[in-house]
Length: 445
Ligand SMILES: Cc1cc2nc3c(=O)[nH]c(=O)nc-3n(C[C@H](O)[C@H](O)[C@H](O)COP(=O)(O)OP(=O)(O)OC[C@H]3O[C@@H](n4cnc5c(N)ncnc54)[C@H](O)[C@@H]3O)c2cc1C
Image (cartoon, rainbow, N blue to C red; front, side, top):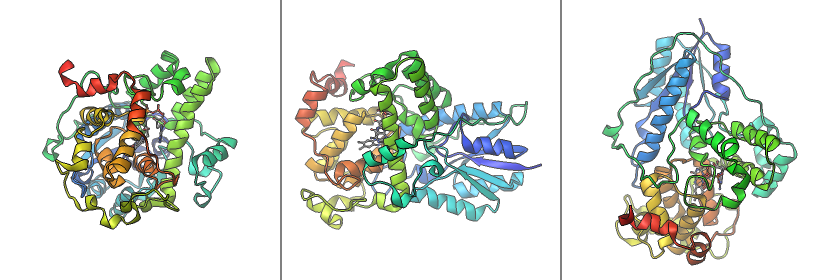
């Protein structure tokens, strides 16, 4: 009997999952593995935890759903709390697994973990790209030829866009294996949390919730047909798709979203708004491929900039003199502490920072502004902000997070720094101050 292991990371679904489909088709028995590795919850050198409470909760919800869906396919999801490689090696030995299927990662930390696991497990390794819209084989270019500017990338891609058809996992058995409880993470200082009722992201994690949200935004309410008009909003659940946490954890495939929008366009409306969701998905793709190309450079102070614009502050020209880089914990006073705690001179910034801390969510408009303010107004190294977002965001994704932070800081794909005027932005996007009141006047709620 051929037994294989499928190691889940940020691909927590059963629908349209290339690795799972292949594993179930090519083997007699499949065992699923997920690891709560202390490294993912540790306090980093920046002084805060790598995974905050809200994302930990979202991961747990997503795993609960994944375990149920896998069990219905006759696959047991086994958890390990500890070192990923050790847990995987133990499981592989116990089941005499001859193959290990997993998601292909390109960021240095994730790659290093895979390589360590490969040293521990002598089984044959099978990699799939489970999170991309466009498979590298269908990209139509080598990474060396990847355009530097998004518009060029998009135009090139759109000329010959190939989206693979959906794949389906085979049911392995009619009997449902046990569903194990999620390990307690309170010993790692992960606390049970709930966002306030006015959060813009009140949704649960998991594949079924992701599909529900996709249906709601498309066929259910047809909000997708107004997306470009509403996407700069900041309040309520429907100004934007809210797909990002599901995409970041792989609860849904980018291809499922793409195909649903195409079906919606055929059956209802095709306009600039429906197109714009795909346009934004291509930004996600652009950052993913750019990260694949540049690897560790994504995390360096100079980023991937080819040249620095003349207005860059001194710390960018010489990151080693940046005083913030030396700090090991968040100082309670000073610009950094004021930014984190939502106590800067700008209430527009403050409201967004409070929202992030209380919910794990912030709109794209908010992210652009608070990032610009931290880097250009307060003069703090962009990587502090990126690391803080990494800890708190529900939808943290290394390529999109670091790619966007570099972009705003002026050390990314566009050498122009994104310097926003907070007063003007507040006037334009929160003219009646409703967002600010929502998050700053806590006595109202
Ligand atoms: C400083 C900063 C940090 C960010 N960090 C992350 C992150 O860690 N994870 C993340 O998914 N996005 C990140 N973004 C991009 C963007 O803000 C979020 O994807 C978006 O706000 C999520 O909300 P939504 O799903 O409703 O997006 P929508 O506006 O509905 O867009 C649809 C989808 O397109 C993709 N998308 C939209 N805008 C972008 C963008 N600028 N870059 C890449 N993909 C995009 C997302 O997958 C999103 O779900 C960041 C942006 C900034 C400025």
